[in-house]
Length: 435
Image (cartoon, rainbow, N blue to C red; front, top):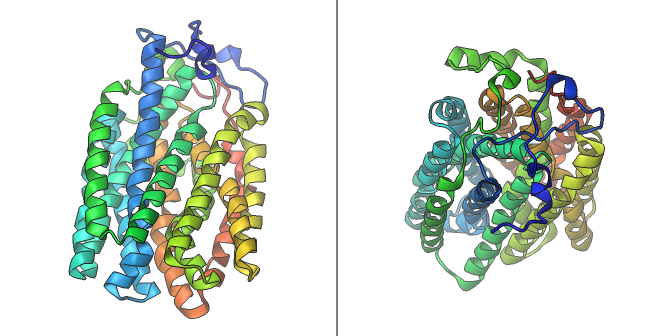
């Protein structure tokens, strides 16, 4: 039974109609939406299921990322080759994101989550087998499956999260992404323990895969249809029902600029996910398990930033929060790169994590402002953002072989700054503009 005082449900106590003429002039301009046929218990169960899905997605990725230093040692390859291996996750993600708009439009977000993550997580034991066999290409294939499934799940879980956010009537998307970060923190913590205990990558991956699949099967039935609570006349008639119609969003300036925001912030997040542990080992002289713990610190900072960001977004709106986030991320990353002191670098990782926390979830929420176009726009914005995960690993790995991993992160600074300059594109749409 949900707590009657639950603040996230405060605006769902009374059904509210959405009227184009009722746009508020406050910064967030949010309006609660009635959820015909749903009880408060069902809305809260939906919300909690989305929390679980985001957490499982983070757990799946962190299971791999926390073992990257061990994988490099087991495969006995250079940093640039590990960059190519990591390219498997990014390539799979782009494939999954490309297919996700069509998948979610046809099957709905709940089935998209089940199919995407349920299949994708099977890539973990495949990659583990590749590591055990010393096969770079089998490892790459497993990561390709992991990336494709997670890319599909990414769009689907953001669409259902945005739908739940509309029914709750207030900002909650950063909390969903905070649970993604919780999943990564838990995953990296388990990975650090596995590393310290000498547990093989394959055994670790197999156990985590079984846990994720069981939890996914329990959560997905509680997700609700994507257009729950949306009146047809209020939501608009354009639905992007064909592939060609969904591709038209690539010509929308606002959607593309939101994609640039997500791209820069995805680089801020993704460069840490892929390279922070190894950068702290090679650039600041830490041990493998210490590098994994620093990654956990970064992810914990992102989690804290996403939780703290909810009241800030409700009070100040998306644009000011995104601009300050960019400043924090640039400052933290610059300290990690340019100050040759491991203690300073570890402290700066916190600032980096806080700055990177809100860019991706706020971008997803902005892309989903118009419910009937949400799947196409979220897919487009996520695809642009995932260029960071596609180009980042090989680019940083190549530069790292030639100039060192820490200087190789300098291009990320530039992209974060550009994202900050584009923050105005994420401004909240009034209900009238969303029709």
